Length: 163
Image (cartoon, rainbow, N blue to C red; front, side, top):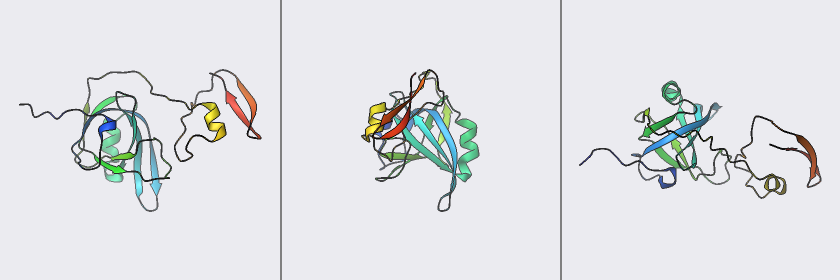
């Protein structure tokens, strides 16, 4: 019998245990400082199915996480804490849970390869008419290729980008 734990996906995560093993890719990371939480490193990670989750680590783990977890690289992440994100908070993913990288977390290379950028842009009409939940980050592209037009939406002038 093997001692290897089974890999799981983001959709399988629940907060009742910390012994999770996932293959994830770092999409984006940023440093954040708050008066109640201090310095943290915040990340958006994605699994093989394209499901995204927010992850964070405290100041004591930032150097180690930045060294081993680089943007665009697939890694096996072992032993993380899963918590709920709460209702109505601003957050970068629609996932109901948040991952915390702790001192026991192991980050190792993965053999999995997929060059997909996992970019899911929101429908322009849904942004304009308010169908999207305002406390979720709406993914946009930093690169502006193509034409830009000024359009009127809900009595407000807005820029529409054609890709």
